Amino acid sequence: MIYKIMAIALGGSIGAVGRYLIYLFVDRVYNGMFPWATLLVNLLGAFLIGFLWGLFDKFYVSPAMRTFIFIGILGSFTTFSTFAFDILSMTKDGEIKQMFFYLFASNILGIGFAFAGFYSCRC
Image (cartoon, rainbow, N blue to C red; front, side, top):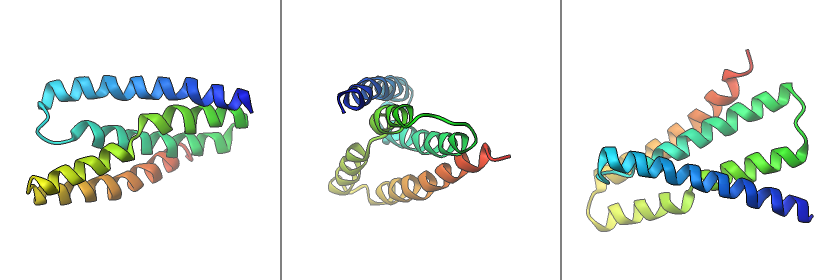
């Protein structure tokens, strides 16, 4: 049990730092006008989860390594709480069109990216 917790903690720190670095880059380019960084990390994370899931169907990866990657790295890389906060903030600020775009793009594209990732390695 302690090894699982350590694997998740290590993976979590890797994913969180990766997310932060993407935020720094995207925020520098787009200057915080829209939550592009959150959308990007969530879509990228969805694609990676799908892709790795499909890859791990072909090649054996231990349950411990799957926990490290899926729960640790990708679980902390993607962020539902920031997504929810962004939706609330846009609604509160009256940015309803942007809020609906972000809501649908995150959900529809996120699921689509997970499927795309899964099927892209199934060839």
